[in-house]
Structure formats: structure tokens, C-alpha cells
View 1 (spheres, helix red, strand yellow):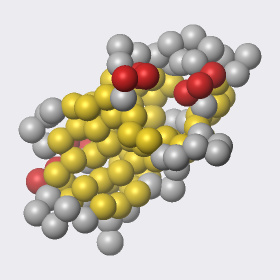
View 2 (view 1 turned 120 degrees about the vertical axis):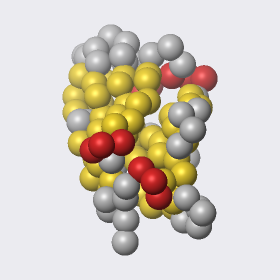
View 3 (view 1 turned 180 degrees about the vertical axis):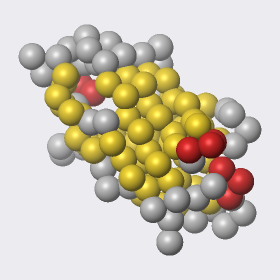
Length: 117
């Protein structure tokens, strides 16, 4: 069973920065892609950013230029650097891993990000 452990959420003022981390129990060789999704109250879960094993990235239009997804294969970790945060970025952020070959999906427990003055 794949385990995903997220960290780095919290309360930040508008314009501030946070870095989220997601540590996976899977090695990079068995991963097709990892990404971050978010869900705000009353809204559907949406893709924020994803990164596949070839290094290709996808970003939601609302975060382009502000968020950066990266990975550390040695630590089996994917990170999301979030700059210039806005109140509309407030949500629970979830890490998702898609396994290579099987395309099985696994989710982390979520971490709260609140942007407020």
C-alpha cells in the first residue's frame, strides 16, 4: 500500500509564500506522476500542478507564474512552492500519486492552506 505524507500547510497573509511537501513510500522508478490538487469549501477538487516521470509539468491557469512543482527523487518527495498567495488559494491541498504501469491512484490525507490577513 502506497503511503503519502504531506506537510507544510498553514496560515499565511496575502502575498506570502508556503512550501508543501509530499513524501511517498514508492520509489521514483515505480511512479508515473505526482501532483497536487486542492478543494475549497463547497467546490470540487481541482488540479493545481502535476509532474510526470519525464519531467513534464501541468499547472492550473490560476496558479501559473506563482506556484512551482518539483521533485526530489532521492527522497521520493514532490514539493509545491507557492508564492504570492491569494485568499482564493485557501483550500485543503492533497497530494496524488499515479503508479507506473498500473495507473493506480493514491491520495494523501490533505493539508490545510489558509490565506488571510
